[in-house]
Image (cartoon, rainbow, N blue to C red; front, side):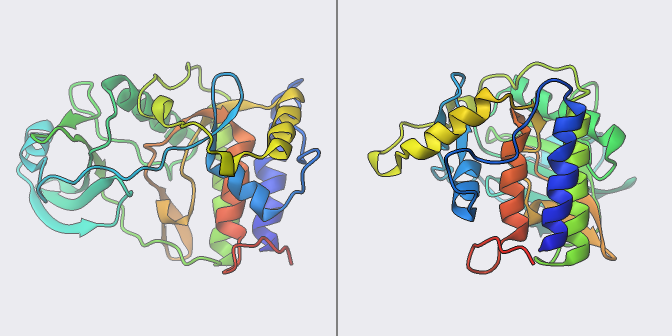
Length: 288
């Protein structure tokens, strides 16, 4: 656990202070305990345009269309015949299959969340930018300038080169160190990307009114003080945890599932990743 903690904060947080110039980042939560509970709660909240914390709307997605929805459209997109080999584990809102053409193997991913073309293209361009410095970020295939297409059932489909690997085992020290370094490199890459905020769409509509049971004035005050100190903001992966990594032979070979990418304070993603990778089975962060 100490390896992740040390690298995450030294590589993933300290660089925000040194790279961002005059925009300094505080390393603690003033007026609030720096506990795993605080970290986890922050990772499940989004900041609205006024900087107020709002809970993310995690309502379930609608029923998925037929198993191979998008296959015919993918053949037209690639200009090749495809053979479906096997389903792959994917995001909670997507169906993913390994498919094969005469030129190689691909991952066909179909998502049924309501994302507009501007959002889909923004995410594609962000992945492409990151991949220049972080080759583990696998860009979507483009054809005719397009990085996605619609299926008969209305899903948004993308095609990626298939990468052989498996989800890394939680707690593997080598993977923890690599995951921390990769997150730092993603964030550094974002500081050099000249892009506006993600276009309004699904993520813009995912905040919901705060139920009375979740109101926490101390947390709100801590967040306000943290923002007042100047937080470095930039594009992030949006869902960075072990299930969205692929490992092979002891190293991370792919970073997947960028659908929730957005522009937000980098510290929030660092905090959420710290919890996801360093927590013990009782959901506590206990440095060695």
